[in-house]
Length: 418
Image (cartoon, rainbow, N blue to C red; front, side, top):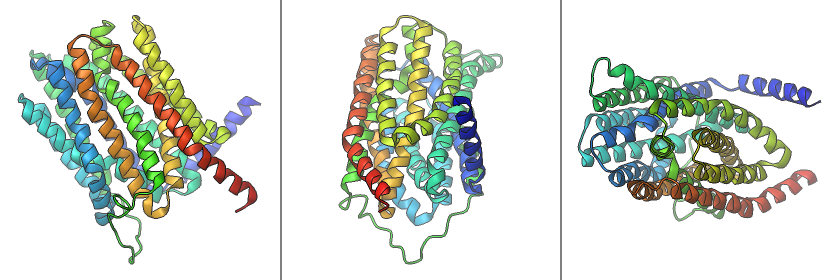
């Protein structure tokens, strides 16, 4: 019976994906190119900075520049995307972000690297803010959760490919340039080119027709922000804090705390796609059983457990298992959370909800990165992971307290046929 249900679920999944329009498919291509770039940067960038002789606490400050810019740029990005349309917004996002990556990889100056990271983060803030309403505008309600899941899955797959390339590409580069720092730099150039290539599928997207009488205003973003948006923003802040404490430093944790090599970490990071695929596929199934809100609460609670295991273990293989669990559960939870946010926000508030989700997520990361940098400078790799577990548990609890009553009211309305 279980096999039959899985088969029917898989058939329905494929049929729903076939129904996605051309814009969605082009958006997925751009997402994958961007994801590969992010995967390379995630493995190599902080190693490149440290190879320049820059201390870990300074690295933490550099790594906070991009998230801080993304927090500051999210609302302007959402507002500008409403005025210019999705197509032009994506062209600016990927074009300027790619150029900023080239500057980060070319410089040895801390202020220049940090400034380039800030500029890149400022424009890249629009990637998330624009992508959520872009997918919403190109799907119907029955497709939306699946579309967000597929987008997250493809991003995770492409990040895994990028991470795998990043682990071994510097060795290949060293056949031509003996200096490891230069090898890291050329690998980062590859990441920048991939981001620039994401402009090509974006060029071919078409903006959906917008009502001519529609007035675009900052009102829903600022003084007109509603309670639902504030609650979503608060939950996203906790998620950002949790991610910011550990995500930029996973490679350092494996290499300098568990004693693995860069190649081993890149392989572990690449293999994340296997449990992530399973978790992402089962996420919507769990949501259909218990509802999006309960599913997100459950998944984020399990993330906290995996983080505790990661902090506790001295064994690389157990650290890898905990890392896979944390990454796959996060990837499964996020699209369910996004789908609930986009479905329950009123039409005019959708861009504002998307923007504030991004603002607080990246603000959390900006605050967290220097904290972890200061701990790593003292060779303390475990306390930040415990802090990450506390933050994601707070996200799970606040998600339940804020949105479970709303989900219950909506469920009663459906049963009554309202």
